[in-house]
Amino acid sequence: MSNLARLLWIACGTLSLVCGAVGIVLPLLPTTPFLLLSAFAFARSSPRLHHWLVEHPQFGVLIDDWYRHGAINRSAKLCSVGFMVVTPPITWMIGAPGWVLAIQIIILLGAAIFVVTRPEGGKSDKSATSG
Image 1 (cartoon, rainbow, N blue to C red):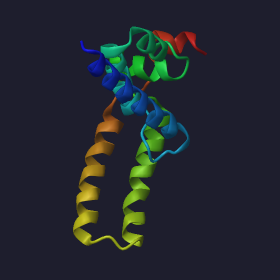
Image 2: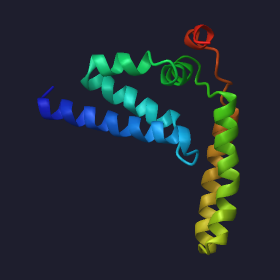
Image 3: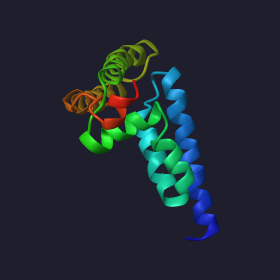
Image 4: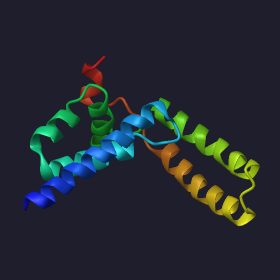
């Protein structure tokens, strides 16, 4: 792999890691998908960064639960679905056109069904030992 490609993968991993970290304190931004993207990018560019991420006490558990079980923990599910429920009324209150609201509701309904039907997290070996 060229140095430029490696740097681009590291940049992608770092940017998605920052977005995932922001998602911890800003619930409208999902954490787990960004962490999965970071793990993917770091696996292709930096074994050291990949190892750090998957072994991280908080981030590693989310990644491990998803990779091993396709699982999302209950608090992440509740937070995600909660914000999916309040987003259309906010969109309506700011005066978005009806067609935008309809598309948003359809997409969020599909996303909510996906999130709710995933197994509960906390089954990974890491979560059992981290606390």
